[in-house]
Image (cartoon, rainbow, N blue to C red; front, side, top):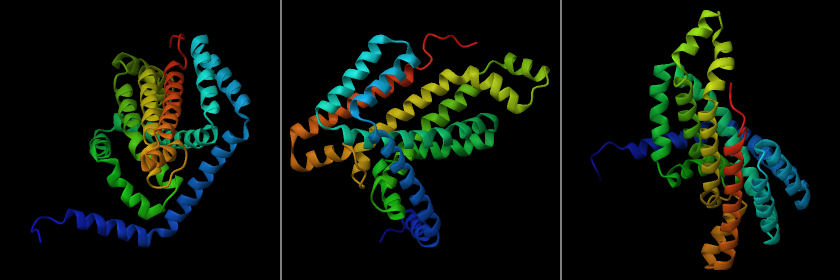
Amino acid sequence: MSGGIPLGEWAETLVDWIALNLSFLLGIISDFLDWLLKTVAGILEAFPALLFIIVVAAITILLTRKLLLTLGVAIGLLLIDNMGLWGQSMETLSLVLVAAGTAVLLGIPLGIMSARNERVEAVTKVFLDFMQTMPSFVYLIPVVIFFGLGNVPGMIATVVFAIPPVVRLTSLGIKQVPKELNEVADSFGSSKLQKLSYVQLPVAMPTIRAGINQCVMLSLSMVVIASMIGAQGLGYNVLVSIQRIDVAMGFEAGLAIVIIAVILDRISQNIGGGRPSR
């Protein structure tokens, strides 16, 4: 027996205590997230494939004003439908949208607080470094203990994996606002909320947008790992293809993931493109 500090045993004790004493709260969180995931997946799957492609293409052309990008999005989605992976793709997309949306809703306020308060920033940095460097397989263990197997633990693991760039880049964007602009806002008697809403956030938006883009990409990169704890969708197809040594199944599922990743990346990068900020 090692005579070192039993950090692993302490972590195990903490996880066991949480699972035993906070099971009611964990159950409420699990039920809510399960309902949210099923609702989003149900909305996406309710659209016929062709109608969904038309809607996404219309949204793409309205947001980006780029015809070639819109055609690429439509062709990519048609290819996914042609491979017979539409249902799995919608499950994956719902998981990514809910996880990335949760990460953004949590990450942007935390990034703003980090930019304004050095103590909050110091504490936040420690946790963000831990979340980014700890192998994802490690924190899958307590997530499974807390929430069992399925889409909910996969979504929570994805949020943990994807939230750091949102926090870091939001904080960076707020800090990079020119000092003169803050002084002008203060001279006009702006409150902290007014200065944040009308000065800091608009100026920092390109940096924040980059953080959101990275968050979406990291969320999608977790779908295969999340499938190992019961998450459904394209990641599950990849996992099954590995178990069966099925090259065809793995290639098609991987290609569908790549198509979705490229579509989400291009759209999130080009939102508001060509419209200079004031």
